[in-house]
Length: 126
Image (cartoon, rainbow, N blue to C red; front, side, top):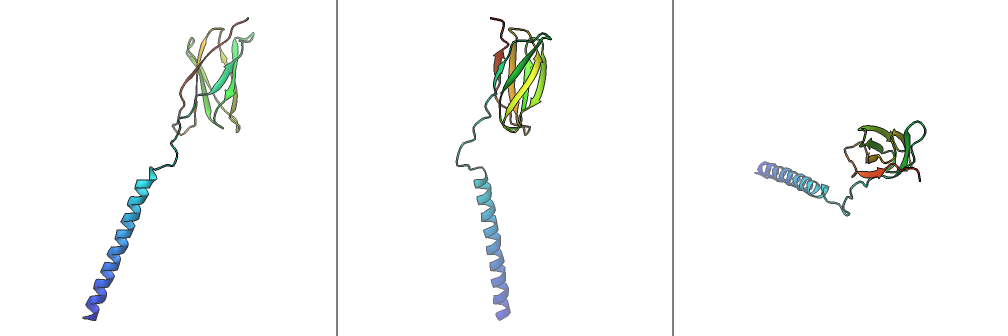
């Protein structure tokens, strides 16, 4: 009779451990998507373009997230360049462009997170 109680006690204890493990798993899954602050979207680059140089290239310089990839597309020529920001988020690149060309810029963190686009116009002489 004592052996029967011991077996039943072990079975109940094992069932209790399984129930606790399932409860912990459910709590982890439920709270895994909980955050205390909302995630903000990745902002577009802060950037400016210089006048085209004698070779027909405009310098683009700005600020993004540290080590982000920065894409610059010249809408007029459909040519683009990709560069990488430094550890402080500063980037500088050149793209073939004429005064008045519309450039589209965005940043990408390399993990699938991409910013909204920013549009700037290559300035002309004053």
